[in-house]
Structure formats: C-alpha cells, structure tokens
Length: 484
Ligand SMILES: *[C@@H]1O[C@H](CO)[C@@H](O)[C@H](O)[C@H]1NC(C)=O
Ligand SMILES: *[C@@H]1O[C@H](CO)[C@@H](O)[C@H](O)[C@H]1NC(C)=O
Ligand SMILES: *[C@@H]1O[C@H](CO)[C@@H](O)[C@H](O)[C@H]1NC(C)=O
Image 1 (cartoon, protein in one colour):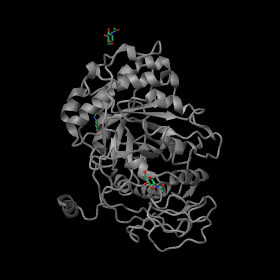
Image 2 (image 1 turned 120 degrees about the horizontal axis):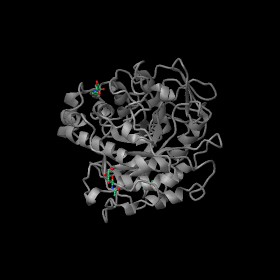
Image 3 (image 1 turned 180 degrees about the vertical axis):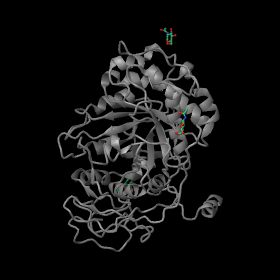
Image 4 (image 1 turned 45 degrees about the vertical axis):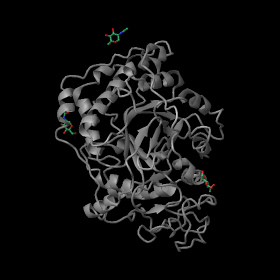
C-alpha cells in the first residue's frame, strides 16, 4: 500500500512496469512473488554493429521514436527481454529504457563493443585488459544500473571460439566478471547479475562453463564467479528435434548448474523461412528445468538475413514472414506455466570448487589464478567512473508509433502503439496487438478476452489494419480482434 502511494506521489505519469529480478540458484526469480522468470527474448541491434557509432552519437537505445516503434512490435511478438550488444555509455538512454520498461521488457546488456579498446581480444587478452577498457565497462554499468528493467550484463561475448583462445582468455574474462561485480557491489543500489555469452563450439563450451561457474576455494560469494551462463546456439535448424539438434546434449551438459543458463542467441536461418519449432522445446518439459529460455537472433533485418522486421532508412518498417511464425509459436505456449512456477526448494545446486579437474579439453586453461587489476583500475572501482554516466526512468508523452509500419503484404498497421503496463507486469504473447487472420473481421470492442484465455486460437496471418490496441483506450482487456 505505502509503496503504491509513494510511487504515485513521486511520478504519477511514470509507468512502473517491471520488477528488478534476482538470481536464485539456477533461476531468475521475481523477488516479491518468488515466481520464476524465463527469458523470451530478441536480439536488438538495428543497423548491425554500425548501429553503434560514438562519433555519430548513436546506439540502439538512444532514439525514442525507433524504440517506441520496435517496443510496440515486440509487444505484439510476445517478447519480454531484449539483448543489446553495443552501447555508448555517454548517450542518454532514458526514453528508450523507459519505453521498454513500460512495455514489460527487460534488457540484457553487453558491456563491450567491437571497437578497439572496448573488448577483450581473443588471442592476446593481456594487451586489451587495461584501465580505460575497464572504465568503459563500468561506465555501461553506471548508465544502466538505475533502470529497474536492467536484467543482466554480459562481461564478454564469444571471446573463446577455439582451444587456442581457450588457452589464454578464460582468466581474463573471469577477471572482467570479477571487476564488474566488484564495481556493482560498490556503486549500485541493487545487485545486477553478470555472466558470459559463449559461442556454441562444443570443444570449448563446457570447459568455458566450468571455468566461469566454479567458486575459488568453494566460496559461493567469490566475485569472479559468474552469476549466469549463456550460449549462442544455431544447432536447431528447420524441422529438427530435441535429439537431432543436439539440444539434448546441452541439457545433459548443463544439468546441475548452480547458475541460470539460457540461449543468448538462437534461430538458425537455413532453411528459410524459419519455422521456429525449437520454441515449444525450449519452453517445454525437456528443457525448462535446466534452461531459462532464450533470445532469438534477431529483431532487425541485416545482410546476414536473420531479421524479423525490415527497418528502412526513413524509419518506416516492414514486418517479415518469420515474425508472424515466431509470434504464433509463442502464442501457443502456456505462460502461466512458464512464468508461474516456483523454483524447487530442496537441494539447491552449489558451485563446484575451482580445480584443474573441471577442465577436460587438453590445452584449455586449467589455471584459476586471475590477472590482478591493471594500473589505475583500482581507483576507478573505489571512486567510481568520472564523469559519471547516469540513467533514470522518465515519463513518455505519447505511446503512439510515429513511423509507418507495414505488414509483409504491404497493408499499413494503423494506430500502432505501445500499451504501457501498470506495476510489475511483464509482456507476454497476446498482451498487445491482435491477429485477425484476414483482417476483415477485426472487432474494436475490448471485450474481455484475457491474454491467457487468448492463447489457443491465434490464427496465422497479418496484423490487421486498425486493430492495434491504442495505449490508453483499453486498460485491462489486452486483446481485441476476431482471432481471439
Ligand atoms: C571513463 O568513462 C567516462 C564515461 O564514459 C569517460 O567520460 C572518461 O573519459 C573515462 N575515463 C577514462 C580514464 O577512460
Ligand atoms: C496453463 O497452465 C495452467 C497451470 O499450469 C493450467 O491451469 C491452465 O489450464 C493452462 N492453460 C491452458 C490454456 O492450457
Ligand atoms: C598459474 O598462473 C599464474 C599466473 O599466470 C602463474 O604464476 C602460475 O605459475 C600458474 N600455475 C601453474 C600451476 O601453472
């Protein structure tokens, strides 16, 4: 009660959509309800790596119009998390973070970028581990730590892709994880998990996992121990199965993990168009005990041809076929089950003691002595990044999308808008727009279909013109349209 009065008093127009999550054993949980959270995510890097350009002062979360357009479409898709790779800590992300927050979406953020001096290098990591590099990673923490929907930071992405890199890089990635966690402990009001995003190269995957998961001397509070582990995996292609995709061996390999494991990228695109039949398996009984969901690669169409939405130079966008297919796969899931379960209480897994015995591939580093902080870095951890980037939720004046967005058949989506949630709600399929099949029969009355009732009958096809839920118009009934 008090809390809701307070939030009203402090910022009546701020949408306070999501609750900061915590890691409990190998699950993400909502600390109020104790319920598990599973990631239903999409990789968000419009413009590819060129979408981040410090000289042009742009990154994927610095243009509110674009974020509004994309958050509205992601609500339609059924997404609850975005992953953003390349960010500029010195830009203002308040509007974009507030939009995704209000849309019920968390953010998983890479602290690195491909630019020189902004990530560890794979073969001579000692040459890239210096104070101004760490300062950059801490600046990302400063820029995002105050947003409630910041879910986690990646301390590295695919730095180890072969045994040669596995020989030298692991202590450095573990050191960066340690440094970030020490920085967060000192400068953030809440704990934000940090972990590594691995390439699914089986020769080094499980050694990487064991190297990062373990606890020095068994100390479960060891700051160099990863809080989570993620992998970019493209092994499920077309009409594969749990076994033919090798997902079964991933589940075997990560069973007993003491930290959450999830796909930080998935979505093989050959054959194309994609059918996304891995979705029911990722969120089904064979996997959810071990995995906490995954992030589909990727939202925006680039030359690599993984996109769900084609964004044009003028900011208008066209929805691609894979978008509808993925949306329909999500719509078939039972989110009451997916988000509603409590983690088991008995026998919580414990991180193993770091030891050479954990490492199985000859040539992969099995020495857990980490590099000490480079000169100048301790002062930054002690005193904080100066000048200090900062972020805060702001109120958004309009939830309506300004650019033109078209279905793949060329029809224009009318009244496309983000539907802001009230307290603690997370987006799920069916919470915003509507599928009315042909589009001809869409009703505009917000009659009572609730998101959970609506799952079953999602018809394939376009998003009907004029059937998008306008933000404020329908407060509770999240769905309209004949398909539901
Ligand atoms: C640390 O990061 C801040 C914020 O990006 C930047 O302004 C400052 O120049 C950086 N300092 C060093 C020593 O790299
Ligand atoms: C979803 O799962 C819950 C509990 O696990 C169950 O009560 C409910 O009937 C299911 N909903 C549908 C539409 O199957
Ligand atoms: C482990 O690495 C540290 C730092 O590089 C080194 O000093 C030490 O000798 C190594 N230990 C073994 C057993 O090789």
